[in-house]
Image 1 (cartoon, each protein chain N blue to C red):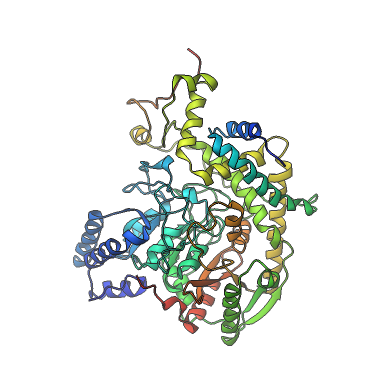
Image 2 (image 1 turned 90 degrees about the vertical axis):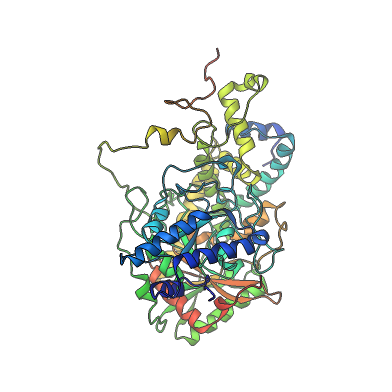
Length: 495
Length: 96
């Protein structure tokens, strides 16, 4: 029997009906990883024998008639930025190469409580900084649709393990588009929840006011299933929202968009920053939603050209502060310092500087430098304070738009997946990959990337829906309607 | 904004980063280009705009001032580059 590793909802049904066992599923996952990892390299670590043990325990409990969690026996991979007690958490950095967290992230604890199979940790841009998963200390991940191309970033591994049908579900993190962009490049569905909807406790911080954990899977139904397990208030995260969680699975049953107003940010769709195939994907999506009964409304945003500049001040400033904890003292890489090196600034400062030099890669250093400069005396008003004020204006654009429309529809990435190495020497070009995604992070809003077609070369394209805070259910409903009317999310790469 | 090699080295020291000569020469032009790009924010009049420091305007949440168990010492020390049974061991802070 073929085990459908590309559908959590189908697997869930088969497991509960006794058609397959959790051990069968675990073996299939290990076999699939053995077949694809030499090419795709999406994991930093896999559970191996532990996975079979987890599965056997679930089968025993099922046989004994125990009540199991909603994800019992469903394989889930976790981005290597989330703390796990039984697997290292490296953030794909030499700095944390051997770090073994003493606690689980709240989302990981919730997966365990739901009886999911924790398959492994996925590769990423170091400390989630990047748009291609090329900034990893442990090698690049390749796009399953074309192994000469990037899977996107920074959750490139999390998207690639789904696209390679290693697992039906994975968890990523999204600071400026890091779930949605790789989802678009890899032809899967990825959701960035409202800031505070999902706990950040145990998520290694990059830019604390922007980071958010979210699900990836082939379709909206699987995203809804995983989101329903990880959403909710967490006392241990001071930014967690204490608000009721919608029933996402009920929301997508009998989904309908009739009467819904969907906005299109016209200057983004018509602008030069969008390649024709990506524009065409949005135009086709507009037709799908119109045919399904939604009304499309053009909306004006005043500040879209300032999204990326604002983000590339605020995120590096927060990163320079958050990453100051990596000093070689309590955990992480510590460099050996010679007596000559110790003489110049003293042994402790020399240890800090050299440990960070050896532990961090080029992109992380670049952002720390940028953040340090933007926060330094004499420049913080010009850069950091200015960016915080513009952030308020950006949020104002969204608030005004959502007085007219229920959701926003637009592109996810300017192009389809680009070749490996194409932008590594030009950081600004890499930053412009975030053109359409950072707005949701700056404003704290939920957004979802949906597979929406392919280029002539066979590379996936995505479209994005954005919603007001805590309106994930509306977004999932509309996404379901789109996927009921299209088959982009059902296409699979040849591997 | 033009950065000299010394400017970059000074900034790196503020960030507690040691850089190679090659990195210094690469980072200067890159930072200039990125900062030149973000300079376009100066076009906007934000004089009367309140800074937005968090993603959503939520009130600070207070926790009760009660003693709760923390990370056990053994767990806290487990990832230390160097430790004895009680403490993290670090290079000397003061000159001998």
